[in-house]
Length: 219
Image (cartoon, rainbow, N blue to C red; front, side, top):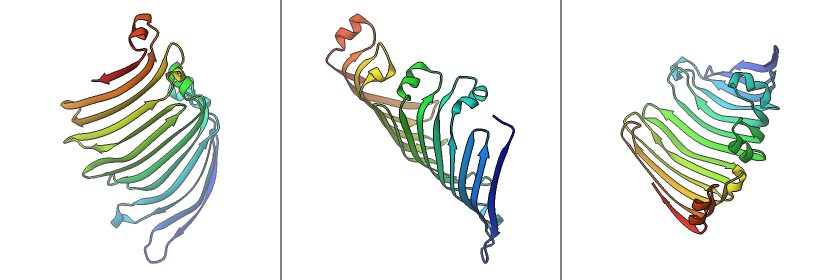
């Protein structure tokens, strides 16, 4: 990754509240640059930390050794919200924008060759984890999801649209819209998938003839 990471910040204790303010955060090295500002509350607030951090990676290829696969592309990650390591609580908005991403998976690499973005809003407390919203866009793919996760049971709903399956490369073609809903636990859950395909091609002559028009998908 590189041997040097340097940075700077301004630190002060806020009068009255006793919170620690970390402003003008800047760091650079190991292929990353970052900026941000944070405020850390005291022990009575479980050291709740709030603020914004933005990290940019100019080339993910330098992280290939860590991942054990060939990576590539560039991206910017922004985290905004609050979290407490001692209590496990967090309430965070996540935004990632990538360009020319490569994960060493041919179909995904083709899909991520241009611009891609991921946005999510997540909260976790003693009651479980709430995914308020998630939005993913890459080429002709768009996906959304929301729901709750808990040990007693989870509910998740999502939608996926791929406007042009040829974005995955040959032999795929056509378009598909899917909706999915999950409820229960991993050991005892129910998953329902509904969708519509149009002009689908999967590389099998017989299957391609059957899927040439509009197809209904149910699972």
